[in-house]
Image: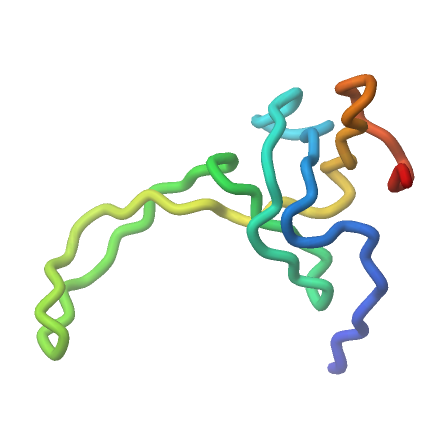
Length: 92
């Protein structure tokens, strides 16, 4: 099954506001964009805890690591710098 990539209006470094989900109303900056899955990763938002195994080759110990989980692009909006609210299009 082939993954179709769609053109996303969101880019790395954009200021966004979350409009749905557990992080609703919070703002942040996009740190990663995945057009294939239509997801974005926002710095400091949607944090999850992930258990990791120790790696004997690199000497890193295991434990619980907190990292950002992706958010679907339909659940975020661009932040308008003038009004401080979400907007549907990029202002010039």
